[in-house]
Amino acid sequence: GTTNTTSTDEIDNPIAVDNLKVLNQLRDHGMWNGTVPVLEFGANALKGTVYEHRPSTAGAILNYFLGLQPQCSVFVGTEVSSFSHDVLAARFFRYGPSSGNYKYLPNIGLQEWMTPDMADPPGHVC
Image 1 (cartoon, rainbow, N blue to C red):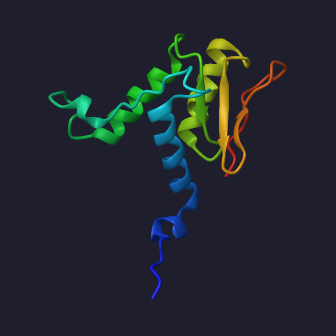
Image 2 (cartoon, one colour):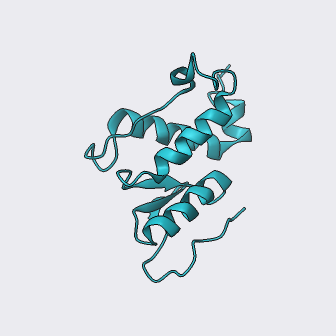
Image 3 (cartoon, helix red, strand yellow):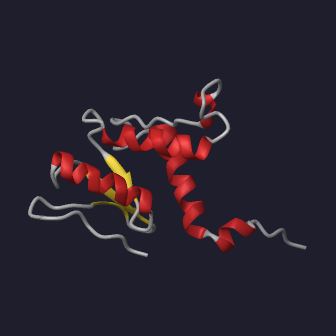
C-alpha cells in the first residue's frame, strides 16, 4: 500500500504548520536573502530564574519587550494573534505607523501592516 505523508497536524491546523515551517526557515536562513538575521529565544534562557516554571508567560513577556525595543526595526506578526496586535499597537504609539511592521499571510507572505497616514493601529481580525 501507499504511505500517507500528511500528518494529522497538517490536516487539523495547516496555518500553524505553515507558520512553523516559515519560522524555521527564517531562523535558519534569515530574512531578505539572509541580510536580516532572525533569533530564536527559548525557555532555556529562563532556567534558574523566578520564571523557570512559567516559560509561556515569561517568554511572552520577554518577546513583548524585545519587540518594543528601538533597535528592533522590524516586527512580523499575524492578524489573528492578540499578542501581535498588542505589540503592533505599542509600536504604533511609540514610533508611529511607519515603523517596519509586517504581517504574515499564508500563501501570500509578508505585507506591510501599517501605512504612514493611519491615525490608529489596525484592529484585531479573527
